[in-house]
Image 1 (spheres, rainbow, N blue to C red):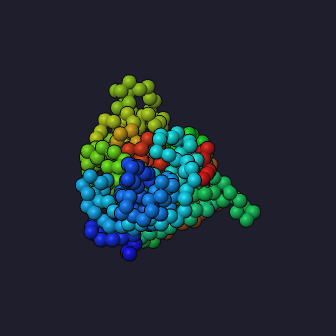
Image 2 (cartoon, rainbow, N blue to C red):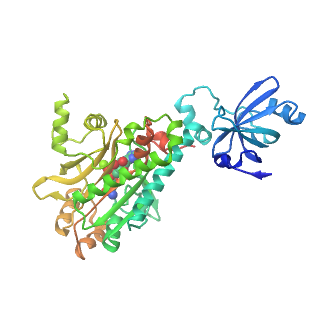
Image 3 (cartoon, helix red, strand yellow):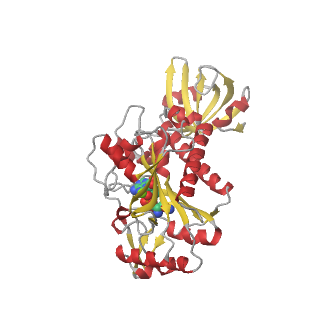
Length: 430
Ligand code: 4AD
Ligand code: MG
């Protein structure tokens, strides 16, 4: 008998097949058992009728517990009433392993309990839908850049210096000196852009975020494109084109998963370019109009971002921030030295910043000055200065926070469900 996956079951109507999986749930009704069997690719109802199976199989159904592993053999029938449209008429069941007291029962559980059991929670239908959407977001992002001639330049994870400020650095021992886990691959992508024109990296990044918020992880994944000869406007055009592409592709290819997590997709359908673009100063005015006391020069908090993004149906760019709250590498606005040519993209529905980036400082002299102002160790940046010594050009890039994008697309209230094994200030396990 052929071993088949549930995701392909429609090709096997009327045929006898074998499904290898686990028991998701069961119901019984006298001479009948309805087993919900999952195999990682889907769930199918297995119908066991007394008399149509041998006694051993029928008695086994009594015994079967949630998450016991089993091999089911039988005939595939189309049935409109069955979840998924097909069911398997069981001939025989082989027990592989009997699970005893699986802790995650169909009743509701608290979030801490579920996170402690993340290694098992991954088996649930909703978590699977979310992580399949995450996979599609990653594929869409990679395809987007690969199809447009960007070269993948992997950035290192051990780094000698800070990229995004020294307060969130994870320090580790490195053969007698200190190394830091990367906060961003950006500086290396700048080197890549000067070599290849347009590049990107995609990998885990680390920040010792002491704040306990639903938007922060200590380990998260970021995709960072960098393009030589791009200015701030080119950068925002690239970012909005990319995000529109990713959202529309998930809508197109992950309909079933979006249904399982009950996502209201009408809001995502509106995410097509162009996106609105407002300056930091305009954003501050929006806050004031909404009764928030906000002083020009401060950084936006989560609540501020929500109020700003709630004014729009699409993601909104905020650009030209006060230079004082931005990183050392940002180029200043030639029209106003107080401003940095940065751009953040805020997602709708209160999901906050999903992209941060901007145009980079390309003058050696100014960059040297900024490193000093930010009290960063000059030696660690000598190589970076080389990029401004040998054929410096205007260039721009940004970082897309993968879990923020997934949480938004899935409508999750917290980033912790957007990654297989979340790391936060209080969680290093499982
Ligand atoms: O805005 P950030 O800090 O920008 C950079 O790191 C730039 N060097 C990127 C670049 O220009 N190449 O981070 C980029 C994005 C944020 O917009 C957010 O989506 C995500 O990374 N992010 C986090 N996601 C989860 N947990 C955290 N603690 C995050 N910090 C940033
Ligand atoms: Mg940022």
